[in-house]
Amino acid sequence: MALVGGAVRDAFLGHAPLDLDVVAEGTNVQVLARAGGFPALYHPAFQNATVTFPDGRNADLVRARRETYPVPGRNPLPQPGTLEDDLRRRDFAVNALALLVGPDGELALLDEVDGLGELEARVLRPLHARSFHEDASRLVRGARLAARLGFTPDAELLRQVPDALAMAAQTPRLWAELRLLLSEARPGAAARTLADWGAGELLPGVEGLEALDALQDAGQPISPQLYAAAALHASAEPEALAERMGLGDRPGALLARALSDAYFSDGTPERVLRGLLRPDAPVPLTGRDVLALGVPPGRAVGKALAHLARLREGGQIRSQEEERAALQKYLEADGH
Image (cartoon, rainbow, N blue to C red; front, side, top):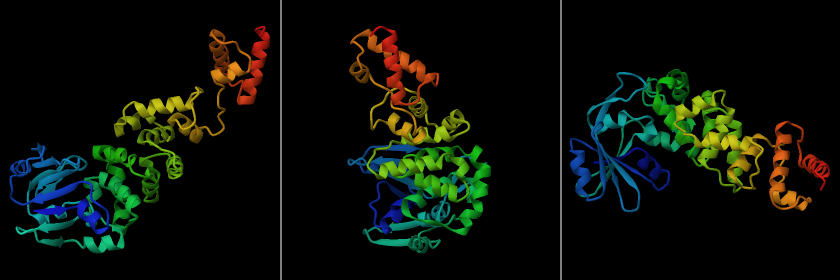
């Protein structure tokens, strides 16, 4: 058995691996997964299993395999293979390191493709000349890694970017990777990496996403939903983008609220997004403001707010000062 992939990479970088990938040669993975007595879910299509430990971490147990892509962009066809085969099917050299665990617990590093050297140089290199053509999602995964860990692209990675763009529409996993990108610690940095690599068309609105990164760096909590809403706003086809990325309805609904004239308090996602997208938008008067300006409590407050909302929608008032003046005029006309 061997610990492989991201867990080994992160360990060499001094980061604690969150989830583990374990490869076993010629072993019944289903039996192996159940041997530890932890909850396990077996996936027969790829003959792998996910084991969940009491602390919430997962371990993916995989039977060593080779892969071919009968249809580029679709799921690969797995076949039994050796550990070396399994490492060479991976995306980047830095993810093709294996830590072998011997019968007595002794450890040995297997590095077939100079992954350790490239890890030390913080370089991302695809393992195959047609890597991005077969699986365009590797481009987005690479951008996520590069932004998170400070890696630079190898010339071979940049050469393959047009291949990934050409295959994007027929690679569902690419859009799933973009959704994962929005959950990175700094999605704007990952989106900028894609843009710098010549793939900015995959995720629009990089400047807005970077602005959200800056707000987050300053201590403002920014959710993946808020990042998604900002990307949708920058898209020429927001509904199509939301469907491709599997975002659901919530980011679009958040965007609609942020673009409305409804009142939202400081720090809410709607107010944060409105400040990004409509920095000159006035803060509407609230019921408390209306009461303070002389509107009697009760239904009159709602009528006054509705009147101001109609004026805003018609473009007749564009600031709080204009709202106050319009309210005073409304009260005088109404006999208050």
